[in-house]
Image 1 (spheres, rainbow over the protein chains, first blue to last red):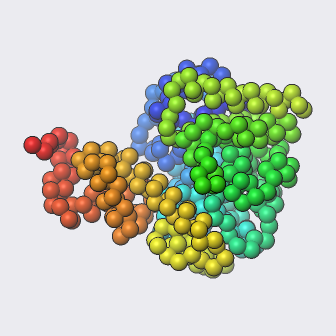
Image 2: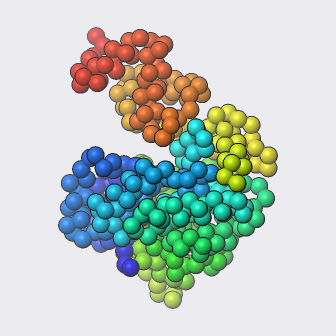
Length: 271
Length: 115
């Protein structure tokens, strides 16, 4: 599989994305593309250009205590079929508990019980999806107490036992290492890198000594350095920029993409 | 097994979005920080879906009223920001009936201006 360089598609970035010549793939937020509405013209043009599309879900709550919602799974599957997606992706997280919704990805308890439940949920999800499912590591400010495994080991166990692929977010990896300690390069070395489908790269800000993964700022050099490290160890099939707010102008967008291309190239030369 | 996991996840969720106590073993400061971040994100997303509401209320007022509303009502089931914004407008309408007329005018596609 080859994806190349990608961007998380947003209407605010549509024109820049459209004019970016090296584009290999885009990610589409499943919740933003209900089956009742046609795909935007701009996406159809990308499809004609041969740009690959990957549905990316936010609200499946795969690590939640309840089984994944069949309607949400159907929405992912439908978007995958409409866009002829090679794969789909979601997060190793939960976003709801009983009647409450967090609206944001919350961390999983890394215990045998937590593992068992997420594996059952993943099996259910995989059974209703015709494409391989890739799981993303999240960043979190609060960690569950007394974990049975460290994050890298837990992630590895989930991937190994579920057969899912890995969507590695290097910005989340950086955020967690800054906010909870730990060496992100050591973390990389403990992951099954050959299972990576693609990589997320995004920007954030440090506020009161805490790194916030906002996707509203340029990608910091530390995150690009981590991308370079990864590419020196193993080049992933794709790398994608996430920018959700405070959208850049075309020049800044292009320089973000160029910074990513250069980091990949630097890593490649070290191999 | 799912039940006991749900208990723990629900306790964490309550602490983060419904003013519940910090569950045992979590760092209270981090929980507060995360709870604040979630509340901001909720408000930003809901108001972004209904820009007309912030325009009518003024940005500061919209932020303040939304915080009051969010304190009383959690995100609606399914978590849709658009639905959350609508729930906010209904909350406003219960305090100031003028919002009913406004909502109706939006529904009918009318552009009522306050004169």
